[in-house]
Image (cartoon, rainbow, N blue to C red; front, side, top):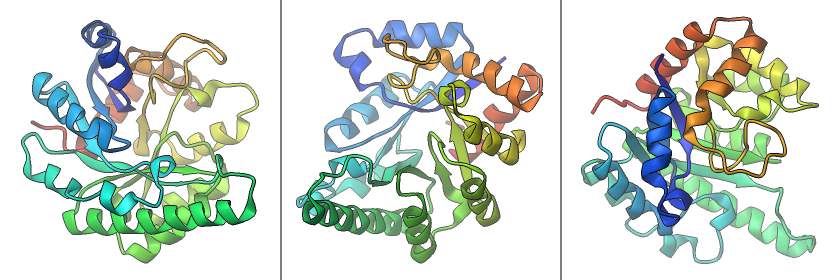
Length: 266
């Protein structure tokens, strides 16, 4: 069986000089392709370089994560669309979005950051619309605002995936009705996450992508060891039980959709 990790972060493995080992473990587990997702200027060039070094295995994205948005976000994004003129070019713009979970307690400061995040998010959605590329959305405690700004941007919803989906039935229906997608991580098997499992069932196997979000979100809840792309099959096994589908069918469907959504053909 062949799997794709549709969302991971390889920077920490590279910095610890264990990336080759991590990639080898992924290949041995059947994870033949992975997308390492950009969050700010400090990792974009690294990921582009890794995609050259591990051609046909590692693909990458660029985007400014909401938790890195501050007063200087405009200068941070100067020239970032130029990555699409490189070879290899990004397979998506992301991860971008809104994160209200980590806002300061001070009401004035919190409102300022919310507004900066919205401005930056809208700008990047506009770039994605011009490029016609897929977009990876980060939405934490900010789902409705993310949906509203995507609607206002005019972006084609068939190019939108909400990564690490952690919402419920109402939210997944909004994505499905618009033609967007949700990808799921190991948290689908964590305790007290029945609403996520219900959303997973609602979306179904034909619109499903899997991700590790490694080095975060280990398969075993509470485990301290860094997560890796090699964990995708384990996530797949858990998801297959929830959906009452065979692991083989799950691997085939999720791999095919990720391949098509991100155009992983080079």
